[in-house]
Amino acid sequence: MDSDTFVYTTYIRTTPEELWQALTEPELTRRYWGVAFESVWTPGAPMVWDENGRRTEDPEQVVLAAEPGRLLSYTWHTFTPNWAEAVRLDDEVYQRLVRERRSRVTFVIEPSGDTVKLTVTHGDLEPHGTIKALIGEGWPALISSLKSLLETGEELPEPPR
Image (tube, rainbow, N blue to C red; front, side, top):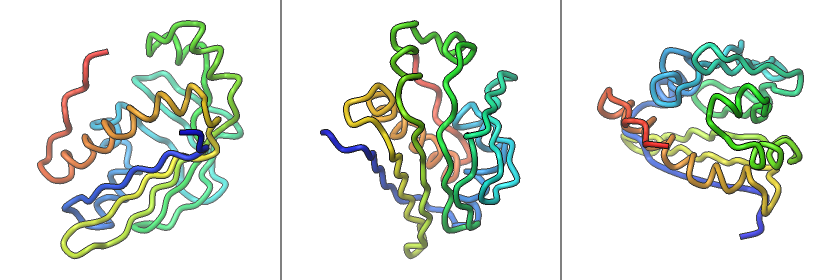
């Protein structure tokens, strides 16, 4: 597939407000994602990614759109040597990642009966790039854990690396 966009849709038995909280509140994102976001969640606001005390900050790492319970969009995180080491990424893969353009992710939240339809769109990807290959496996696992957390109160166990 040579598209510059990855799209994943699921339905979660929750409310739009609870899903918004799960996407933005650090104590929840840390549970299913392992990342706590620091942001005021307004367009143009910076985002800091905190993964177990390893902070990723960059002036281009910002909120693009934020409508609580409806829409959230932001630029993807900056790839740093510290991040690559922490996630045990080999240098060749890391070098490919840093050469790719910055991508963005958008979450669209829509009520659907007693569930919420969540569509995750990760765009501005290099069509045959490393980021696209990694998120193709990452997003389904991550969103499955989010869904489990909201529906059962327990996130999925982290898959082995």
